[in-house]
Length: 198
Image (cartoon, rainbow, N blue to C red; front, side, top):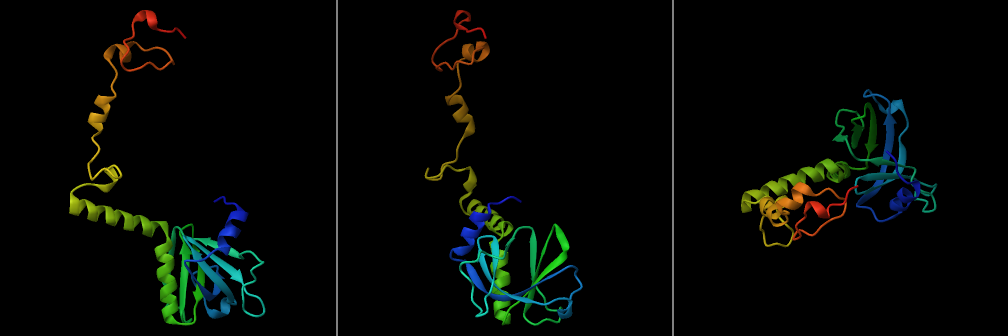
């Protein structure tokens, strides 16, 4: 995936949809324990479908002069609470393109874990697309009309493509004998003498 570093850095500094302090550990396999590595405390910002993380200074604050230490693009990922990991208040994230690598997060309370899991799941394109399809089906069921086939601001009338084609159709003489790159008005009749040879 290509992206512009400056734009990502600028985006990370704005207001977040959800943010907070968590501990983070990247594991190389699905078998993990607290002894397989050290958790690092980071500040996380969720903005749209991007999860930024920042290093904290000695006072436990974000250094606003430093850009984000990293970013997760929350697409094709699976987020779940980690109840069997032996680590308290944990959840994990795995990506479809690297299912053996697990990103493990811990929070201070179980409620915070549920908030983060819910916020991350709701931020993905897959979730927004499924919500859009569900709303489209509900509108179709209530009105009998597919909202994607209707013109905007046309009082619910459905576009009839057959009538549109008949209105703009050209006379047969123009359709059958037109041989030029020059466009002609629909009302003019083209004869053999008016054609431009290319």
